[in-house]
Image (cartoon, rainbow, N blue to C red):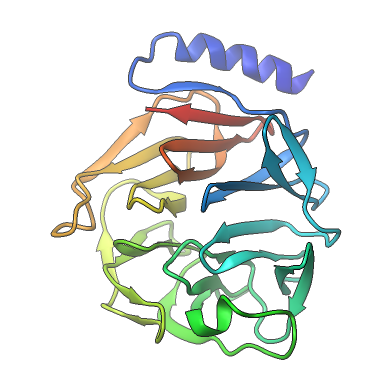
Length: 261
């Protein structure tokens, strides 16, 4: 009932928008977080179940309870309520021995990045370890010299992150074989709680007020872009992801939406 009311409100708000066409995605009850990459869409719900989208239906992804899931060139990974890291191997998640992470992202050029619980220090798992990992043995993480509560990478223009003060940072390059970066650049502007990078270099964020924004002006010579522009969604958002020209949003009312520009 709550989701239906939220969707009716959404329809009224989007009636005045011409730049973005948004609609309710296939319904996933109590959705909490979404991630898209490599042509796949994965999500978690409030009961810590992971799902993947096939056609118009969501299907359970493994049996491990996860609060965050990500998909990309490094594979499908997730974190559980105790911050243990897991990778999807042969249809189920296998726990990876090593550092705990409260959030991970597999969207780079083969490396996996993550944020530690408590101190939110950012780390990277090199591509030669992340991609072939089969659930056997431990994994060694490399410190990225930055405290970030959320981090996301793309294969083109590096990685973006948000620190504990909701400030946005960018590293223009991330070498997947070494996890070496070009250093972190502060991106001034709107305070964010989530920033996500698409495979094609597009960057979207959810502000601390729950508004969705796109970073504009991004190119090879200016990977930090030139500013933020609002995506006109009047429901407050908590999770966002972008892949293959589709924007995916989870609202605080647990509705999954998809938008096309």
